[in-house]
Image (cartoon, rainbow, N blue to C red; front, side):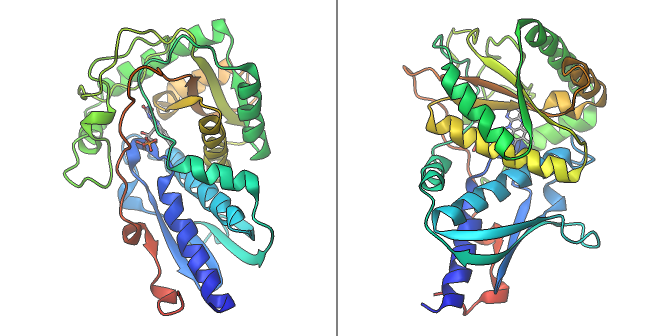
Length: 331
Ligand SMILES: Cc1cc2nc3c(=O)[nH]c(=O)nc-3n(C[C@H](O)[C@H](O)[C@H](O)COP(=O)(O)O)c2cc1C
């Protein structure tokens, strides 16, 4: 295989691997363009939540998670890469360009994280009574810091404040007909490649300290009688509140979630509280004004006795990876 062929093949494979990344409502709001010497990540406006995410915060966080997946996949295959975030203000859909690829040693840590990509999933059942080991929380927190964001583990009083704030966000969203219609759309997709099928959604509201998202309809995932009293709640946050920091927050989310998966820790993001402007502002108070909140995370050890939810479907590779500019290059 020529150097050029191996490069474009590596780029296309990394983009396809990034399809495992989590995204809000499983919208997968990204499209990759493989070019002869670079890889571009674009947003897809059709899969932005017009009602729930008009500013594109969660769209950027989701794309950031996909970007981190692609970076890790390239590192695992022995490619060093330069990432330019939001490289062209004139091209709004372009969120990142991966360029200047050079050969290096395959990174064993990245290889382990790649293995976690197909295992990681969202398990919305209450977590078990087993506490999350302190060392594991330390590793997850360091994974976030390494990506330029911060993770604040909430103490008991802050969790109670969060619970009230999340309850309020849920009530605001439940009263909004546009949000309800948007949720109904993403939870009843005929096209199985995006959205949330019934078997990943709780059959009844799980007993959790902080209310989970109200999906507007029951799913078919059995919940069991447990209460997630051993869950750890944490706030992913940072210094700025702009597209670049939301993208980086998504990279941090991916790093944290893959690290947690490697350590046997389950993660559920809770984003309704950052969607509603008033509750997002209230979360800033939980942070005592020291940063801007990007996402709430619930961490815990999943119930080992019962099978968790199945994997949420994904779009096919050719729907999210455009190789038309290099067709013929690839081996
Ligand atoms: C930015 C973002 C926000 C999310 N918000 C929520 C949420 O509020 N509640 C929830 O249960 N899951 C949430 N999720 C999880 C997604 O629904 C999930 O990643 C997606 O459906 C794909 O499923 P998987 O994680 O099992 O692969 C969020 C994920 C991301 C990336």
